[in-house]
Length: 107
Image (cartoon, rainbow, N blue to C red; front, side):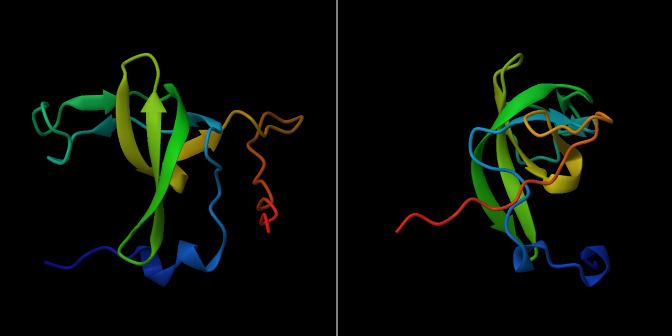
């Protein structure tokens, strides 16, 4: 079985797209792939449009950022890729999410 590597794009060459505590919205419905305890495989965990907050930032396959996102309405914390999320804290006049510049490092 081959793992889909998204055409070789490595997100980790850039800073994370979202920050801790950032308010985000799900761009798609997320189902349990078997890694969410207490739910059956295929159960819906997050619906498109659900609002949450980034609580952790990790990595997957040395390629992607995974954003641990707490969805307030259902109380679930789900790991999501950046392309599955949209910022609600950084929106321009056309209601499109604006990528945020990385925060300056604290010395």
